[in-house]
Image (cartoon, rainbow, N blue to C red; front, side):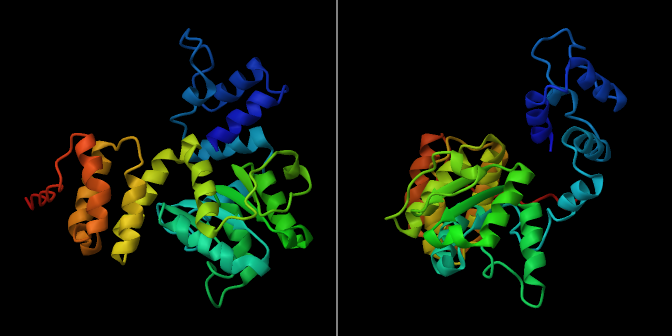
Length: 296
């Protein structure tokens, strides 16, 4: 929400310096320039604003009704999404849902939960409501445009929803060119590639979005923790080993997972991927078992 407010304030000339400061003062935030520091920006001023005030500010800046903002927030913890994963809505034509399902499975190993209609949805619940809930609570949007995509009213509505939400969006041409507003950008061509290569294209894009960098790591750790076989554990470990570095907390979590999940600690694939990574960063391999918490 803060990021989207910054985007609006940067682009909308109606929000001049005085008007922005009036908004900040109204909500008890430090006005711009208050520190005599040119680097002090809007995002610095609102970093500690309360959730309720943030919702009201977001509504005023973006013109979104407060009830609509609240509705988006209430669906963030939806059971449609795996906790800790990046929430990615994967728009596609129904004819290619098997292929898209394979793409989603590949992304899951990288800590990205791709919502694929009819695969991700829960039984005995209205399917259209679940799609709308996923669109309200998604963090990013990708359209895979096969030829049939262009003839689907549902796919076009999903794109419109993504444009209206202002979430990061991407298109993989497979090989059809998207039409409408989203078609003005030159998107990557993926007409002759398999599901693994499409997933890699999407992963590379998501990984470049700053707001998802920590979440990608946390999602990878969540995927490793839940790995049910040594193949998935090894594939996730290989992706973790491509991360530039980990925080102390993330190293500790990785050690915990290593000792808790026998598909991780007992898998040769995991060791081949992580042992060089540990040594490269001055970490002992294999990781020591975390100390038991003091009961007193």
